Length: 461
Length: 98
Image (cartoon, rainbow over all chains, first blue to last red; front, side):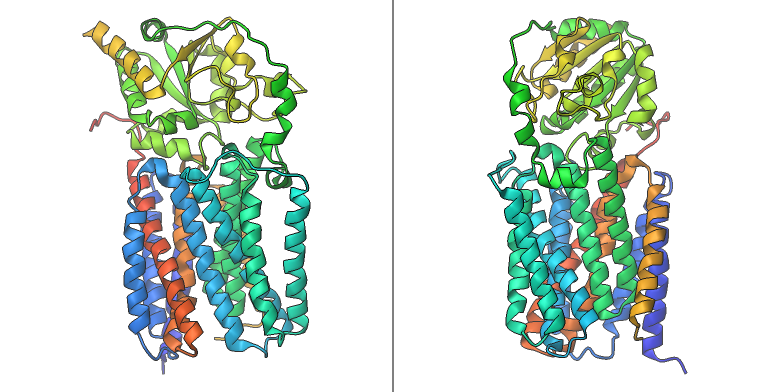
């Protein structure tokens, strides 16, 4: 005889399979939407199955919460594409909040009879959950620019942070041995909550791709820990998948910046550059007008556009699409070179350019485009800086030495759209701007690209 | 269905390996949708919260469970919505024009 519990387990089993397939189908744009569909069906099965759980005595709160959650979720699913990084950070915070709250109430329901192993994973769950919650809120605040984006550092910062983490772990150890000391539990939540804030304070905008990925990984791991506590295979697997995904992305991002995790978390980028920026002298640069730029672009046969965070800030992606169209119409081959850490989260530039209707096969990753630059007539840089800095390749004293870059300096002509000569985020000089083949196009990215497009289409029609 | 510790660890380890292998193959082109999709899948934590809020074992469990459902549901709904919106935008080059 088949009982409800068995049916629920079968629903969970199918959901687990669908989750794995969902990620598998995401491997290529052609099957990716099927992946979302698989995820949705899996989720629906799991949630409906859970509603039949024998222990549930009342549905009133569940119903209210599901409706409220949907009401919050829909607008969060409809934000502008430029706001995706902060939306992602916010959803890491929500995920972590859920895990922390469930962990906390599990503790109070079970205490003082919590076996040591259970207490251990429960501690891991709430510590990771709590620090991810506030850390992600801070990251979202910085990305939304309601909080200052520059890194805030002070003497002994790392010592304070590590000290806090150590105290939280010490409390966890005491609770594992003496779960009856329930008065310690709130401290194990509050300290990681503060740690989460302190952890993000010293992190600047350019490090956000790594930090968001790392928080993603933490959120996943805390969910997996929750699976251990609730003895749910479905949760363990979903958490492990999310944790693995965040981990892979963090490793990618760190590699793309030639830095280690610890360096991102404990070595606020702002500090190191003080010396680098000090010896700066005014060197001559060549600048050009939109008419001149349009003339050079029209005469080119191969153009590579390198977008960066500046394009996102200026919301210039649609003008870039017009430029792409105008040049393609004239028979110019246009490709895009995307650095892994361009923007504020992994894949940020791809989404913005796809939104502007630029075909994804024109968006090339760093390794695939770098070989093309020597045969490229014009490399047009829009709002990117450090990822094009040849000092990363040549100058061993540069703070970004060793970071893989887009070799734009190998193109015949380099054009850089930039607001002014002020140093970039990290305050690092970019020797690219002083090369003889470089033309600086000073102005707002959106307006400047718009002017170039007008020149190109006006001259043609 | 109860799980012992060792079985849980096996499940976790195997899932992590599958995760690495599957996600390594995701094109960097789609890393942003990947993150929003895994966010949505992570909302599966809602199952724990639903049981907590539905069992009504204590006032605290109801309050925390209810908030947890709201948080997780907003992730599920928002995550799937935005992932699908993003993926819809990725088009290969071809003759069609908007």
